[in-house]
Structures are given as structure tokens and as C-alpha cells.
Length: 89
Image (cartoon, rainbow, N blue to C red; front, side, top):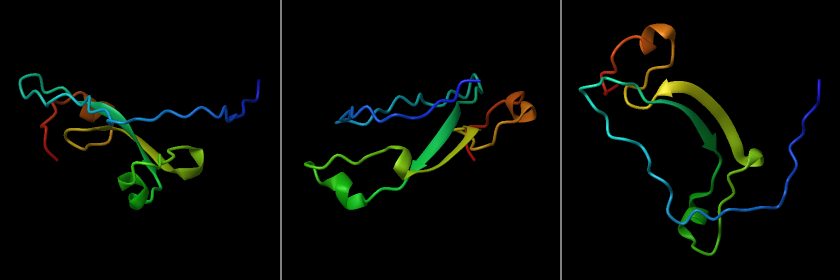
């Protein structure tokens, strides 16, 4: 077994316009949108300062949760996955 370790490469990516690729819920299909959610510790003042780029990295990572449905907010299970998504929590 090979041990792996995170190595900081020093690369940073500035995201000027945060992506919004979430498709609208389609009630005809009833399809779930399964997602994994990550939460980071941030300072809101840094987000409003255009000269500072907030860091979303391992040191600020609080939790990773999921998968869960973005639309109906149900945690994934085979039972939930086999049912139509209602689209609202």
C-alpha cells in the first residue's frame, strides 16, 4: 500500500465569478441532484475585500457531508434514490 500525502504546490486559482451550474429542478423527471457538500471556515470581511483572495483549503475545511439531494435535502439511501424527488424539503 502506498501512503499518500498532500503537498502544497503553491498554485492558487482566483474565481472572480463563483460558478452557478445548478440546474433548475424538473418536476417532470423527478430526478434527484446528488451532491457532496463541503464547508469552510471563512471571514466574511475577506470576501467583500477585492484585494484579498479567501483561501478554501485543507486548513479551513470544517466538514464534508453527503451525498444528499440538493433539491429535496434528503440524505442518500437506496430507498430515497428509488423514489421521485419532490423538489422541496
